[in-house]
Length: 126
Image 1 (cartoon, helix red, strand yellow):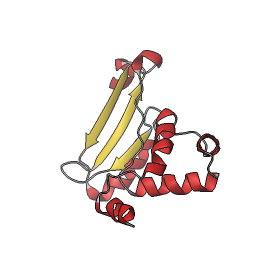
Image 2 (cartoon, one colour; image 1 turned 45 degrees about the vertical axis):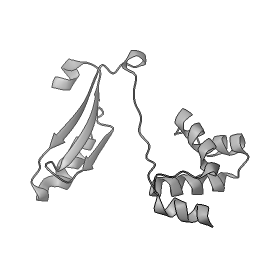
Image 3 (cartoon, rainbow, N blue to C red; image 1 turned 90 degrees about the vertical axis):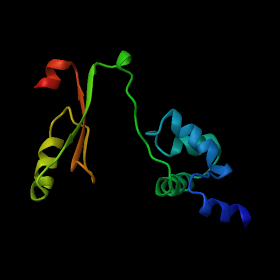
Image 4 (tube, rainbow, N blue to C red; image 1 turned 30 degrees about the vertical axis):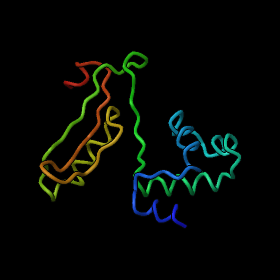
């Protein structure tokens, strides 16, 4: 019981049962749930449930691309201030570009952020 209370008090606490799952996800966070399920001897539904629980807490997934092993030599992040009424339109248009894997709305000094993965600085300029 105390262990469960500690988990709720400290959102960064990772339950011991999830440590192996996190290790596997660090190797390949995109793998289907059958792969970690077979590695930790849990049912796939348990894997999916635990990942959902972790994502509601303090775990998030991101991908770093090593420029040495990819054709991407000019990655960039774009932050923009957009008229609020145009935010959805501008975000949708930006997301249609092949070089833009994701666009999201932000709060604070900017309204929109986009990740760009360009092959070279010429593509980035274009």
